[in-house]
Every structure is written in structure tokens, then in C-alpha cells.
Image (cartoon, rainbow, N blue to C red; front, top):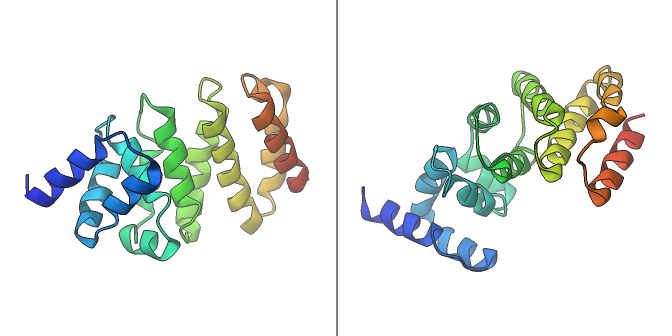
Length: 172
């Protein structure tokens, strides 16, 4: 492993405030390695890399991820940490997508929304992704509105429930 990647991995294992972590990781030479760690199967580090990348400026994200499909594919991979999917969805929300990528995102986000075992925050981000796609394809709005059934609201915290209801109201 080269020294830059080793240095990045060491920094990612630190428990420091996000701003400090971001400042350490914004160095240009870290970016390809930060991307690689974010896309990796390393459950201890991929979430943290995604969390840091999520606060990068949009232009930087577009350079780091010129191919959003790789992030969308992460949503279909098993993960023991729900927070990883939440952070990946936040990154995707800031990237431009083509029609095919929107279709892939819609399918992945729908699976996440339907999974009642996931954390409320992950499911909320999945619903935001669904709504984003529905803005370009209004015919999907009715399909998404069918998911406001009480069954899908199980396990959602009261604060997130309010956000979900507001989002459904905007879709109707």
C-alpha cells in the first residue's frame, strides 16, 4: 500500500470532529484513495469516507464520481451499517444523473424504502431519492404515494415521520 493511502487510512481511523477530518482529507492526493475506500467493502472505513465526501463541494464530487453508477451499485450491496447507505444517498443527491442512472437509483431507493428494518434516516434519504426521480417522471408520483401506507411508516421516528409526511404532501 502506498504511503498516501496508508496516511489516509490512518486519518480515517481517528475519532475527530467532521470539519477536522474533512480538512485532513481534502488534499488532492487523497481523493482517489478516498473514493476507493468509500466504494470498498471495508465496513469500518467506507462509511466514514462517504461521510467525509458528502461534505465536499458539488464540483469536487462530480470530479471524484464522474460515474454515479458506482455509488448506486453500493446501494444494492449488503451492508451491516445503515449509515453507509444514508451517506451514499446524500452524495448521489448532489450529482447529475442521466435517465438510466435515475432508473437504477429509483429501483435501489425503492428497495431501501421498503426495508422496514433500516434506520429511519436511511429510509428518509431513500424517499428523497425517489422524489428526485419523480420530479422528472411525474407518472411515478402516484406509485410513490402508495408507499405512505401505515405499514411503511412502522419504525419511523416521530421527527422523521413529519419529514416523510411533508414529502408525501409535496408529491400529491
